[in-house]
Picture 1 (cartoon, rainbow, N blue to C red):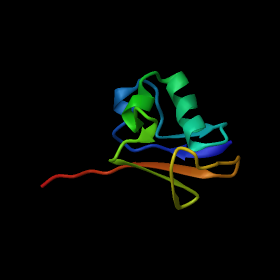
Picture 2: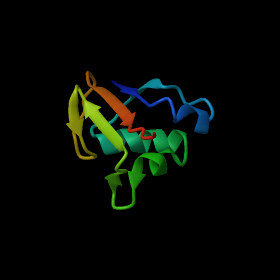
Picture 3: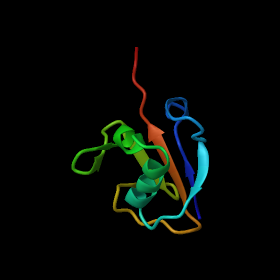
Picture 4: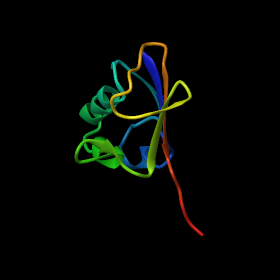
Length: 87
């Protein structure tokens, strides 16, 4: 199963959501779908309607920038990073 890491801003919004977990999916979209099935509403925090990733969400698969169609395999590491702005 692929290792998935989430930004620290998400777990407080979803009870029992860990920052690091394993997913069994073949694409980034599939991994997000698996998370949304377990924690309804999570997809809306990461994706816009369309479907596309929200502009402030960056996903990397094995260190390379990814989109929803990017394939993942059992040995992949998927990092979801939320851009933070401020002054």
